[in-house]
Image (cartoon, rainbow, N blue to C red; front, side, top):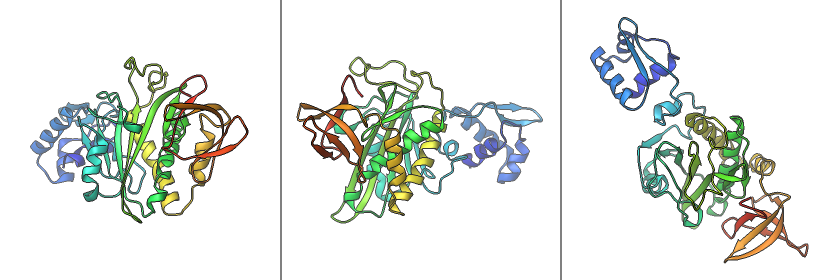
Length: 325
């Protein structure tokens, strides 16, 4: 019922709606409406109450990551239609894996804070409360397990395109880092549960630094945030755009077998194609030139002798010749 109350206020576009009108629409008492309004205020919604006028939102709630707020005006068929929101959690990926079998395809787990967030290769991910977007998407595609790694590229392409929609000019450091002004602003962690020929589920973790201005000493030279780079965008708008872009590219791949749009975005927004980069494996560094991303989503590089090689995601780490990228 509370979801229906906030939806009425969101639809009202900052105009007053009487308590009587809300009670009639929902078939509840005005006292019940008042209780729901107070509960919504506790969630962070700025709601104005005026005698003989009713209730209205003082401003569009662009920073409240509740299900009803994100889903309102979300243009997807199934990605993000179901959202589980936490104030604090150890890891959205861990929770998603625990509940994946019982949740519907496209369910999003989101938290204001992660106490044990992880990145690729088990690295710790700093997830400060209210400063970023820490979410996981539960996916149940009808694809072979060997085709699952491409989902990571779909995520990267969808994020960089979503940010571009909002005027934020980022790039992709293959396969799963989103870069802003030569520093990492977003990471993607994809985890798979599968049998020999069948995917049980994929958990797609996304961490985005939105408002963080100060980073720990060990990462301050390689990490940044959207706000730190002088961009302004609400967390709700970023999430909606990512979910919408992701659903389009995900359906193209898993239903239509079409990788082309994702690959076009990955190439267009690449931070490393046609650049000298370091390939790092087992603590050994080799400088190579990044040539392309092939049709499988793997990296094509050329060594000093002119030999071309195909690099599969997960085999190596990549660094720029003079820095992170």
